[in-house]
Amino acid sequence: MKKEDIWRGLQATAKGALSTRDYRAPALAKRLAGIGLEAGQIVSANRRSLAVVWIPGVEIFPRIIYVQRHRGLFGEFARRDEGVLGNLKFWPRQWATARMFANTAKGFHVHPPFIPEGEDAAKWLRRQFAKKTLANYEAEQWDVMFFVQGRVEMILRDVREGFRSRIMHFYIDGDNHRSSNNVAVVIPPGVAHALRVEGSEDAIMVYGTSTNFEPAFEGRIASDVESALLPESWRSFLAE
View 1 (cartoon, rainbow, N blue to C red):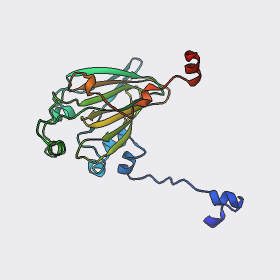
View 2: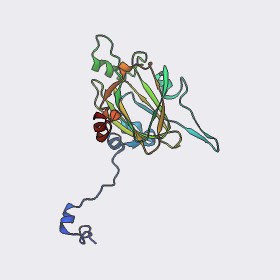
View 3: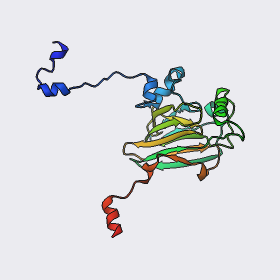
View 4: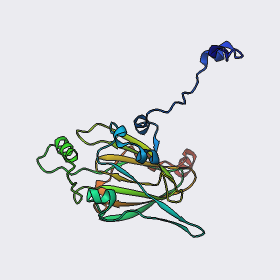
């Protein structure tokens, strides 16, 4: 049967409005910058194939979770002076934890990059990452994030002066969901980041920062998702 004939049993108006979904998978780079990728697909891909959308300074590295039958599980975060954090010479000054309830999100947050007095911001930042010089970890907040429970969607956008606004969109599994999506993420200052919990399970994360927590360095962009209003009927009743 000819392809154009398979819909002959439909009314003309329905056929005119008909469309079919394209199930072909876009290139990995396009998906990472668009609909999102599983974190495991990112770490297993050739980094060069993602270079066009990869945000300079961001690192995503795999973790191995060991299940102990009838007892629980065990997973390392990182070892000082080893692996990705060792290569970056980045060891957190402060560790913290956060719990996100199911069906909640953290809006975009960004930390200010350090720019020396008298330096042009764009030129300084491009030079820093082009030469892969060590960051001034004591003057700017870098994050490394680990997820120990639940599943989350993470979106990153580069908003640094002199850099293209690249986007990275991917999905991470917590330790209690052992998979190739058990990863840690390093986020440099100047890269806005947002999280959304997937499914009906709370998400728990542990994260290290290169500086101590400083509210003034917690810049917020499009974070109104965190401050949803009470229902209109409740507000009307309380206002009476």
